[in-house]
Image 1 (cartoon, rainbow, N blue to C red):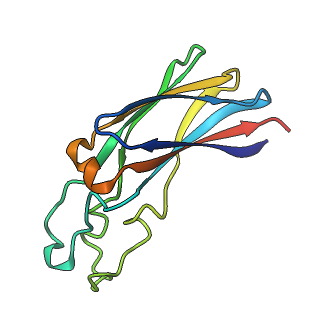
Image 2: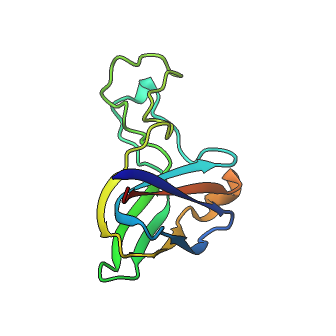
Length: 156
């Protein structure tokens, strides 16, 4: 078996925008095994990493929106999740990072982790719905780009 990624890019430019999309799955797919999400603001960032002076203050992570993925088969809704720009609290108790501008790989979306899902390979189309939750802040960041990465296992 070989793992392959199918990447779908969504550009969001309006507040509270709802995007419906479809992803075609190859016929030789054995299963859908993971989902990965990334987001990149076109302009200014929605959130900031907690500076060292406030290292003990918990900060809420900025929410961009939520995503739901559906298969046309029995599984129906197999993934739902929220999309955040960064984890503002990832350095909260990491005292090895004492410089203000020193960032770890997790703080700017440079390192993502795929969430495991199990969907049968009979699915030929995955339908998705993305709902923007940025509201008025979208004018400050001038829109953003989302990558929905669907990992599949194909038959050799």
